[in-house]
Image 1 (tube, rainbow, N blue to C red):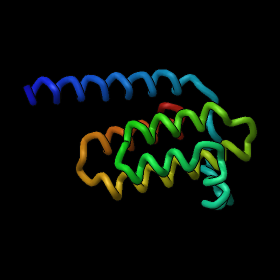
Image 2 (image 1 turned 60 degrees about the horizontal axis):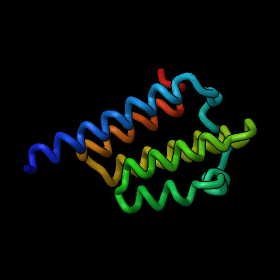
Image 3 (image 1 turned 45 degrees about the horizontal axis):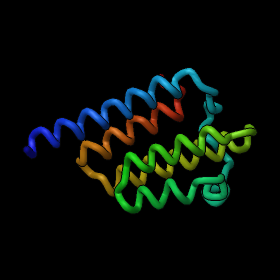
Length: 120
């Protein structure tokens, strides 16, 4: 029973990752510099940023990625895009720190990288 549950979990995570990569690979591209000059406080003021960090704190990596995608959908200016890049970097770093060798954490980090690099 545990083996099939693990397979189902892996399948769900794989489908989510594939959907994220495909869905955001064709979307609006953030600026390449990566948010230089944007403070961490400014990034935390983006609508939904608190939800992203709350999910990370709970080690809900899929929830964190979903919340980060929701933040990305609401971006309306170049300043917000730069703030998003900083938020994504903070999220990626925190997941790497908390997740260690957890496969779900590693997959979340990979998806976050694709969100900020335009799927490259």
